[in-house]
Image 1 (cartoon, rainbow, N blue to C red):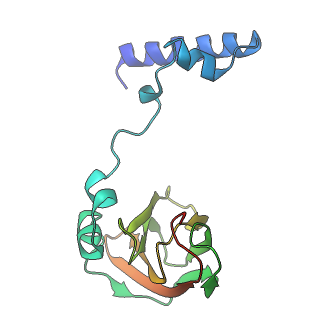
Image 2 (cartoon, rainbow, N blue to C red):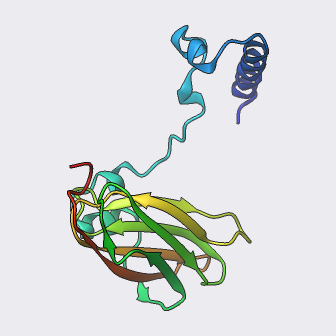
Length: 165
């Protein structure tokens, strides 16, 4: 981070601390245009992968192609989801040195549901709620630190209107 940007972050951090101790909320600071959320949000998200409309486009844009099937990726979820707006999913990668994980929902309008990166030595494990437009296959692609991709998938049936319907 350049010294000027670091100084700006320090100034904003002090302003936020002073405001919160004075009883002012972050929302009030945002409304007053004193706190810029763009300074905090990640700027390098993969727009092409998250906005792709087909599974093959999303996999290609996420760099998750050319993967091998692996039994070391465990996908825990319900077989039948009563509500497609909230499908609980837990994914555990037992692949040594898992670097990243991409979770795709094949029949969703935009198939890439989540993209996660893990620090070296961290356990590649995540629990989240997915929105599913309809009954579909969940596909998880894990990239190991050696650059190889591995995948596993699991079918989930959705019985009641998916994606908030």
